[in-house]
Image (tube, rainbow over all chains, first blue to last red; front, side, top):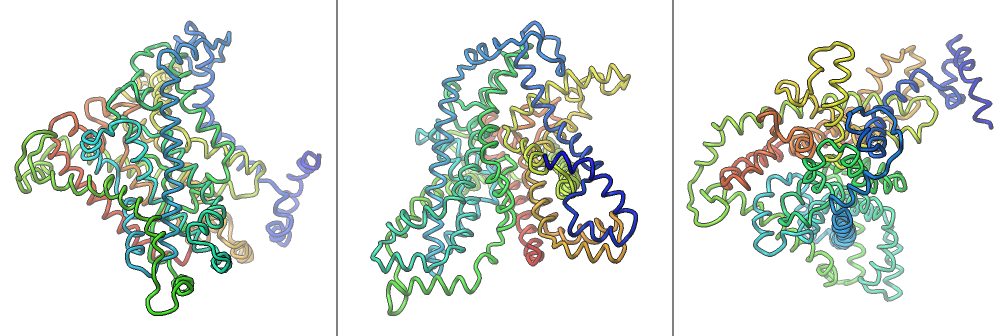
Length: 305
Length: 321
């Protein structure tokens, strides 16, 4: 209600503020939040459209009948709404299999990254004065400067040799490539936890093991959430690594499956777009529920480092 | 990884202040009073699995790869050391050179486009507007979508909708798909990459803009600065550190471009949009493993040089963040 009431007033306030210089200064201070820059809003809405347009096209194309989709008109609304594209994409790409594999790889990556990075970070931060731990930090961080293509060929060769040219191998590699970023976030956070907390636990006779699991790991929860979401997105969406590492095409993850079936979709655009939508929906849904951590993670990753 | 969502820069030296070092020594001292503090063996248990896995999965392949770049290994069978032969050949290989030329040109254009758009959006999103939260939420969406999947969506738009638009408006060069033309295919790659990587750049700029204290703008207002002067003389210098971070992180990401190009053009038409990563991967199927490892090693050296540049520049600007 108050929102609706203040809206018509906004331009009036802005107009009167422009009238004199002294009130213009005041506007920035106290009443600043009540005035709205409408021209900026119009531009932002137009920009938001360019973000939403490909998503609209994906959804609307996926709901068309094959007969309607074949004309290639991206912007027409589906008439009639036909969900057979989903059924066909589901069967053609064997979606349940690729979905299960991708879910397991992603789950493994998330759990593995959070556990390994949290444990390693705790050991590093609490033993910083020991050379092994200090050097390990820089050693693990160095991977941040290592693009995957540089080590791809030997990794393909080695995973093949040890029987890891499969989703398990991809999971391990996903964890390894997430480590640097995650350890950077965890160590920065651990340094901000007051040591007094830990000291009192230790005086009560808690071992390092107990201190970590009962005190530190729960305290790390917000940072674990950020680390987990970035591990999730990197793993769920990755195309390069699974496409190169997984030898058996029937064990491929969802993004690679899209590429494999690209030629078979041909002009059945409703089928291909239904398949794309099923591939991107899980990540978008997870994002909608975890926006805060996603946004914080980006800034912390860049600024804390 | 090619995903643009690993924005991290390590100015590791600044991570550890003397105070923290002192506190760490203090807690260690609690455990053993005399002489050098002893490490609880459990800490080794915490760290070693990660160190061992990391060494096997990353370091070993890297060392092995660099070693093979000095051999004539083809991916299997016997091999001999051949010194710098591969490197000399790489430098005079037109296929490799054209992939470097394309990738650097593409990265250069994309980094400018992304940073200009993301900065302006960040300024807009931190100005006096309504619906800040939902708008920001929408702008971040592209970041969470798989590169190759969204590339397929754009490929459809570029090959169906854009030519239809060209035909309707009579713009002749739009009437055929921009992706099938050697001189315009790169534009498609730039657009999709920009679409996907603007969000993370934008979020870093928003953090930068929010870190500027309001008093600075009040002072500028008192001096009678208009919006443009405020942007150029107040905002830009104060977020300079963030610009450096974004430009270097972005450039590094775009040099590894792969997913989106595979989805859009698969390196074509011809080899017009073949990136460095794609060229390296031909060593897997093409039988020139050692040769492409030389290429990969050069790529690695370039990545390290860019990282060193980043450390130099961001350490200088550390006071800002």
